[in-house]
Length: 314
Image 1: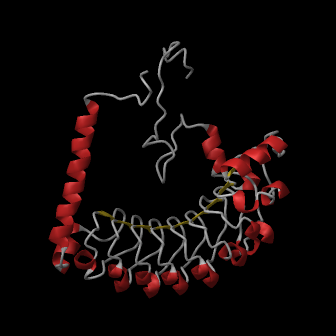
Image 2: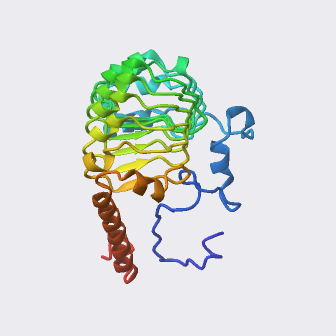
């Protein structure tokens, strides 16, 4: 649709919001979805050829990167990291290379010593093309995103344990079959998203990730979880959708006192299974779950009465 056909006239205020339907997570890709979104999910060999020139780095762009600390190179048709990026040195805090065709990161990536966020979604990254040793030397790195099925990560190396400042690790839609036991040494990790892989089991050491708040294990090949996951005292959300899970750790509801979101859709765990197992702490968990949904409903009702467009009225 166009703005004109939507009767959006001159002077109208438009608010762009995150949708809860099209192409989010594992949601459906409907007919009206942009073709570009579909293209991003295709392997390189299957993508339609487009005459998009590779973006060249100009002087003013480099100066802006150094001034802001944000190196934004998403959807630039890149096949390699531009050398100019490395000249940013300690100025770079965020490096966004998402939705390109990058297969390799140079060892000199460690020159970006103050890097906090590394975003590699939708590239052609493989195990042997990613130098985890060099990434491990980035002691300020807090967020790594290597998601979507255009990447081909099959293993996480043990050296990942040295990323002691890491708070978020997103490696969804890859080919992981397991997690290294050393992951338990990531004591600052708050969000772990490894959904849509081929993971068969979770190491006992997961209980060492004491700061975990959200864990997404959806769409893997899990049958059970280790009892040590109950040690995650700050855990609020656990997603197990579309696994072969048949039971839950016996003390998960008792120990994980902040857990309020538990997604078991597509597993063999039903309410009957939980009731028959008489898992201690279920009642308290259910109260938290219901309370959370009631708050969301209340907020929705309150918000629907008056729409605040978010613009400066003056």
